[in-house]
Amino acid sequence: MHFTTIFIWFVLYSILGWIYETIFCSVKTLKWDNRGMLIGPYCPIYGVGAVLDVLVCESLPNYGAVFLTCMLGSAVLEYSTSFATEKLFHAVWWDYSNLPLNIKGRICLPCSLGFGAAGLIVLYGIHPYMARVTDALPLYWQEPCALLLMAVFSADCALTADSLIALNVKLESTLNAIDSHISERYDAFIENTRQNLSEGLVTLKEKVSLEEFRERRMMEELKNTLSTMNWNQTRALRSSVSFRHAKYSELGSRMKHALSFHKRNTQ
Image 1: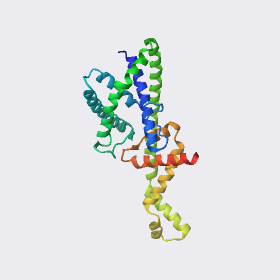
Image 2: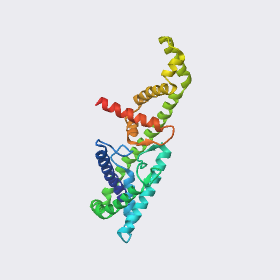
Image 3: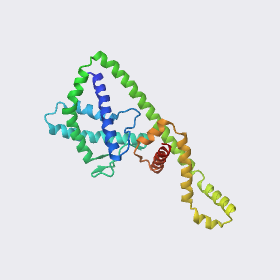
Image 4: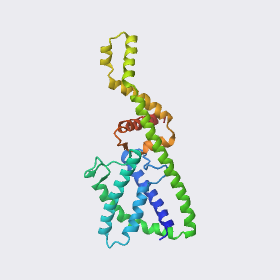
């Protein structure tokens, strides 16, 4: 089997995965939810899973063996992908923490069972038609198509990685800006307000705590950071479910909320 054909399968299954994931999540949330971490309409993890399903399971003797292999293989693929992307970018694109029998929110038994069933559907229901499509296309046409798809996919990966790295830099700089000399800023704020209102220092500190002042600083810095983010960075922020990095988790969630609020107000 030629590598060119396998890569075309990978792209086509990635697109099918994106369509499934986007429709499912959009129906679930009753709003458009463009799934996937990349810019284009594809989810590579589905492409990898489907291609491995075809290559590994085609020679297995029965449905039970295919189901078990796909169930265990999907768990390994999901866990390793989640672990790798989290370590690289601190971001989370799926989280099964609210589902039963999950491991660190990366995988869970119900979803692994579902992917086992999906492996049967792909191998026996979808792939025979997919193979007909690629078999009908001569190899000398498949090769330029595959090269073009590879160029687009590689550029997308590079742009997405750059956006995610830049997003983490912005999160770090925003946190530093929030906490930079926070105690001194707080004392200066209290003193200026006291002079303007002629109130006692203790009374003012009772009205505006350090935590409340930090909250104000956070909102100010969030607005400043969001105003400097380009389209790729805001898309990367929207595509992530959350940030598991202890320092970024709260700030990332706040930024996503502020971004959604701004989008609603501008529509």
